[in-house]
Length: 453
Ligand code: HEM
Image 1: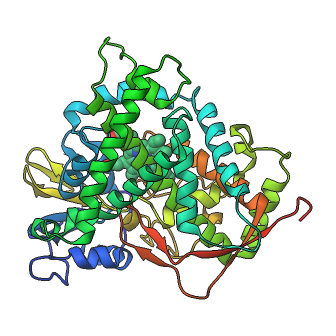
Image 2: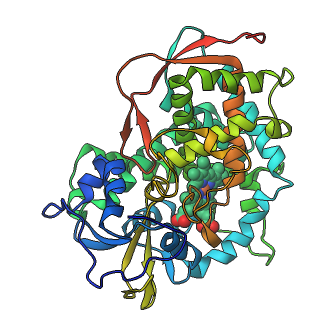
Image 3: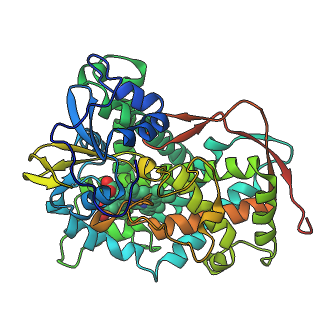
């Protein structure tokens, strides 16, 4: 099947059910256990197909133009479906999960935190935190890079959210709680509710972590409101009166902080881990990324160096294509409509996937090959619209996209400037099911670089 930028037509009225559905769970286990295989097989069944997630039958969109249509009309295709129901359990009315009706007001309130004038300060803070973390690694050690990368990006997001006043024990508890929550979200979204209510250790961890995180944030917000000094962190913005003079309640502030924390930590942590995986697999690429960063003056990298980290930035783009951290999203249809020429009913659930469109051979030749050269100028955007969407599209597009890419590029520059990475084991790196596609068994060996290398 060939995919083009134009919308597919003649979609059959009765959409095909994807093969392999099991009683009760439908396709959920196949999707959770091997998302890559499941999603890359789906387009062969047409631009739209049916997928069963527990008791729910949803429509899976396998075409870039239709995926774009879904993202770009956020009133018609609103946040909703099992994934967003679970995300809303965790993030409440935070900006990521809130419905269209509440979104614009929130986006207006929070946009100033991401204004281009503020980004340099955020990026410099993030790069300094990450460099400090990287400098503490020991030569000759083997690192679990998924955990390390996440620890680095957690430090980075904490530094921008709070004003450096959190004690390390609080940060550790929050990161552990976040990880337990994100590890459970897709399972809770895709498996039947009866399973997720069982008194299993994983279910108990998920519930306990949510309670613990809310309690920690409640304390931090109360302490922050009681302080008189302001260091310009996100938390200050959230606790100040908005343009209409209204102040957010503690619950609203807590919802937004959880949103930023989850959205900004897991995504970047996993992208950084996958980028290091590919550099360790390809010594020549790693050497070139190192050489680029090694030409920069000594001292911490800052936002001013971004334009000189061209190859590092292409490695990040290719990582976000190959392993889009947010690999699957759901939407709810709000009124009867047609997608392509296929009728949909109000209340239908749609599933869209960056992983799926970013592995279409028609849009990205040899899609399973990791190749930063795809993005060498002038090919900085893909020829097929809607086929590179790691940050989504339209009004709900990631508010932290520039910040996240800048952070990752500086992190990769800092890391390759200081360390040489080699695989510590021949065991294959696998995916772990999670809200992000997380690398499992990514153990890398570290050797220091010398500036002349
Ligand atoms: C590589 C890094 C990142 C990736 C791949 C990523 C991905 C995404 C995606 C796919 C969405 C859209 C979800 C949807 O349409 O349903 C999104 C939304 C969002 N992201 Fe990110 N994100 C990243 C980094 C960040 C960072 C660093 C922050 C904040 C510090 C952040 C905060 C948000 C927020 C608040 C939203 C909701 C935006 C809205 O609905 O208006 N993200 N992100």
